[in-house]
Image (tube, rainbow, N blue to C red):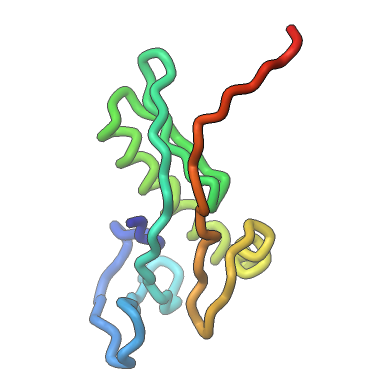
Length: 126
């Protein structure tokens, strides 16, 4: 599960009173805005390439790497954080998510569902 928003910058957080899915309204002293925090589930693939571990999600077309699986996962969570912060600050969140195939259901965004993951054999000319 990935959390979006700058977790280190949060202050004055409180659980939402509105009864919606887990959401947190936090004040960002730096930006002087209230942001809504949502828990989202993303399918993340971990791939080993040589000595590096790659964390990738097709839902955001986002990847990062690390020297261990644990480090790749930690860096991926940070990358998701920065990704959403940038979209919010630029005012492009809805456009980018829609372009990536996300659907807005009421007030929440849902990533595209992965139907299957297969290993396929291909014959290609070289």
